Image (tube, rainbow, N blue to C red; front, side):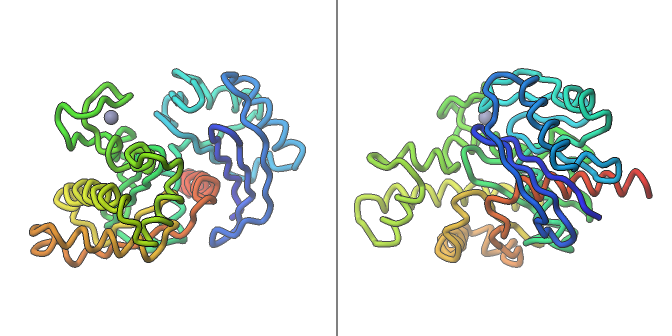
Length: 297
Ligand SMILES: [Zn+2]
């Protein structure tokens, strides 16, 4: 079944009509209207109409960063300057039909689970390392957030009590240390993770302590997650995972430093996510399709 995936980012809104096996059949994109949710809903509606994508037979999923609840239909997103915006209502009023809202990092997991690195898995964890940290869990063949919409906020596990202040109101959250933006913040003179990685791969001495410490931070959080979930598979996505095998090796070596990992969790397979920049649109479509099929089953 085809589905429409929409990914609302801080600078642009991406659209895709998605077929079987995550095949993108058509794409579109428009700039994100800043601080104006009604204008954003108008943009989305206009584009769907123009493309003829608002068919009653197509599930529509919308992925967005921040606190996103499909149940209440509300979104609070720092990157958009939104506080409790009724996105679902704004869209359904205009479209005359229902849409599914999904948090972007959880949407990415849904794409990986439907047809990517987690395909067919019954016990799995997904983590995205980007501006923040998010993800999800598949427990007993079901996304855990379907049971608890507030679950899987891995970025806000407190790993450094009394540590760096986090916008969530706590101190010492995982994402303040292990997100890609945390890495860039700690690497003086660098403006992107890409630049850092290039120098790390080239063996540039000055950056290695920052990088090694970053990998330690990432692995410490992963270790805690393994002790809770002991999944068969752990998949890592987000910008940094595009560093591929090199990054995966760093993580695997970092995990080996943990005695509990060596002893109990060695059989958890660590993989990289496969969908990169398309994860949001693919995941929004995957989540919408799943909800649609459950409803009509
Ligand atoms: Zn936090």
